[in-house]
Structures are given as structure tokens and as C-alpha cells.
Amino acid sequence: MSQALSQSHARALTFFTSAAVLVLEIIAGRLMAPYVGVSLETFTGIIGVILAGIALGSAIGGRVADDRDPRKLIGPALIIGGLLSWASLPIIGVIGPGVGSSLTAVIMLPLFAFFAPAAVLSAISPIVAKIRVNDLEETGAVVGGLSAAGTFGALFGTFITGFVLISSIPTRPIIIGLGAALIVAGAIYAGTAGGRSTPNVTEAGLGAVVFLAAVFAPNPCDFESAYSCGRVVVDEENPSLRFLILDTLRHGAVDLDDPTHLEFRYTSLIGDAIDGLRISPDGGEGSGEGDADGSGEGSATDPLDSLHIGGGGFSTPRYLEATRPGSTSLVLEIDGVLVEIAEEELDLQVSDDLQVRIGDARLATPDLETDGYDVIIGDAFAGLSVPWHLTTSEFVAELDRLLVDEGLYVMNVIDGGDSGFARASLRTLQEHFDHVGVIIPPDGVPDRPVNQILLASDSPIPDLTIDPEDGVLVDDVQSYIGDAEVLTDDFAPVEQLAANP
Image 1: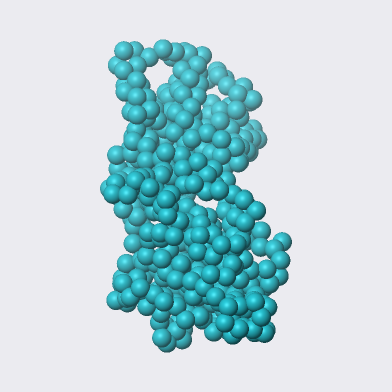
Image 2: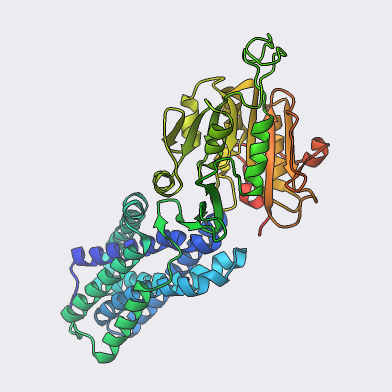
């Protein structure tokens, strides 16, 4: 057999196809998020399916290369891999809305959309190895060199996608561009290997159909960032009300005309917690100076210094600004695109009193002032779950450091059933705060996930005026917590503890 590939070309092909597989793997998470959310289970399902595709493709590629002329297989494999990459977009768009968010869904969706292109592209590496191995004495060098090239390609695909492409280009153009690159490379190689470099009418028609299906596939996103796919929706009954939808959830509701209007039950409960907080004018000594009745206690309209873990629609800082004039808010928001959308469409006005810091809250809190905040609102989510590193004892210790003695930590969690995550979070709060509480739905916690508001303070939990239709403060919080374990940086199975929808 004549050698059709030089060593450099063989390694370049392996590098390219391995990079393409990893681009698909990372983009899969963004494409699937609007339908199944973002969670550990989601990425576990994607990684598992892609690895299965790589394994099967490698096995089949090696077998086919032994039975046929491998030089004539690479071009078609590249072209088919490109077409299947394009096809993933309409497959996701058609199947995604109906799959739900169960464990089965996070496996079936990538199985239908990404298994086939991963398998076809992974078949190319053993085909290339078959062409390159001409002498048994060189087998180790050939296989080792191709394996290294494939690994470097996978690294390149991972880094370029995660660090560059997703933050600068919408996901669908990335997939369309990747498919086009594969098809062009396949056509070029088919021509050099003695095959046809141009498709016949049927092949060209099929390619055009798949391309158009990819271009016009349903897209639930009005905007995309490195963290979410989102859109802003105007309420049909109240034109001034805007809903911020990220992936599968409504993450915020803002009334442009009335910042005191808190649309969601959980935001209303957070508002109740803020309304009930009284901070002594002298920082807790109770001197009786500076308050209206000389009691030494603050009033419901006194300004508060607040820290917000997660911005969302920024409804809570706006509420605080409207109900307690003179208050200050620092919002820690990881997604800079979300801040831009809030400024453009949700009337967010950043000022000296309402500041936003872009970045991960876990990394930002060590730089903040000790005893610098009267209230901290924890409302950061990735899908249905609070990011695990914002739930652990180590992070809660930081929040305790930041709060004044009379200060209050208010944390929004989504859980149901036996509330394993909510109970573990309360147990973790108990490690650092003298008093904890939880507000649950008025009829108790159902089997499905619902918002529960956790409260923690070094002072007694303030008396709250809660709408009985929104929730009730649990009387015996210790019984509610039960035998829950503390969440730590070494052990925080947040998504496994929380109830599945």
C-alpha cells in the first residue's frame, strides 16, 4: 500500500477531528441548557455520551479500515461528521422542548444529537493509524504520535471553546462553522485520495437540506453568554412587567414602573425579611440615639448596607432602594452579559449606591470589609441548584464575617420532598450563626421543588410579617433540620441532595 499521508498530515487530521469532538461536547452543554438546565447531571450525561461515541467510533473505524482502502474513508468520514454536526441543531430544537429535565432526559438528548457525530469523527484516528503503519517496528511511534496529537487536539478544542468561542460567538454559528470546516476538509481530502471532490446532485441536495435545517433550527435564546441562554419577556397583562428567563427558569421579574412590586412568591418573602430587619443606629449597642422613638432599635425605613450574591433581574436591590432610601447595595454577579441586559431592558441603573461587581462571589468576598453589611441576600443559581461552592461551611464563615451582629443572611433555595439540600444548608448555617430559620410554603413542602427561604443571624431572627398565602416560618427548625450533615468544600453533593423536578 502506498503511503497517502505524511506524518505531519496524519497528526494534523487527528488533532483536527479530536478538537472537533471536544468543541461539540462543550457546546452541547449550552445547547441543552434551555431544555434540561445546567447541572452536574447534565454535564455527566454529555460527557458519558460523548465518551461512548468516541469508544464505538474508534472500534468501528479500526474494523472498517482493515476491510477497505483506508485512504478513501477519511474524506467521507469528515463530510458525514460535518453534516451530523449540523444536524445536532434541528435535533435539539425539535426534541429538546419535550424531554423534561429528568436523569433520562440528560442522557437521551445528547444521545440523539451528539453521539453520532462524535462516533464518526472518532473513527478517523484509527483509519489514519492504519494508513501510517507500514512497519511493525514503527507501530509504537506511529500510534503514540497520533495519540498525542489527538490529546493535544482535544485540549485545544476544550480551551478555545470554553475560553474564547462561547464568550464571543453565539453557539449556533460555532456549530455551523465547525460543520462547514469538516465538510470542506473532507471534500479536499477526498479529491487528493482519488475520490470525487465534488458531490453529486443527491449529495448536494442532502447537504443543503441539513444546512438549512441547522440555520433555521428553533432557538429559544434572545441572548447568550458563557453562562446561560436567556430572553426577556413582557407580561401580557402588565406591559411594565418584564420576566428574565435563563435556560429553563424565570430568574427575575421587574416592574419598570413600580420597583416595590415583587412578582414571585420567593422575592416577596425576601422582601418580607428585609422589611422585618431592624438595625440599631449605633450598630447594636442600643443607645436609643438616632431613632424615632428612643428605643435604640432601627425602623423599617432606615437605610441598610446590603450585599447580594447573584443579580438575576436585580429586583431586590431596586426594592431596597425604593423602600429604604439611602441604602447601599453591592451585587456580585458572575455574568457580565446579564448585567448589560439588565441595564438595557430591565431599567438597572448602576450608581454609587447600587454597585455591581462582575465575578464569582466566592472569589470576591475575601476582599470585602468585615462587619460591612446589614443584610446579605443569597440568590445565585445554576439551573435549579445553588452553585455548590456558595453553600459550604467555608463560604458561610465568610458571610458571617461580613455581617454585623444584628445582620441577617437571607438565602433562596429550591428543594422539595425531604428537603435534603435545604436541611443541609440550614445545618451548615448553624455552624456559624446563633439563630437560623426557614420559610416554607403555607401547606408544607411538597414533593416537587419549591422555593424555601433560609434565614441566619447572630441575633434572634426578626419578627416577620408574612402573607399567609406566601409561606410560614417553621416553628421547630431543629426538628426540620433533623440529622442533616454540614456541607463543606470536601463534601457538598448539592444537586444530589435537592429534589429532582
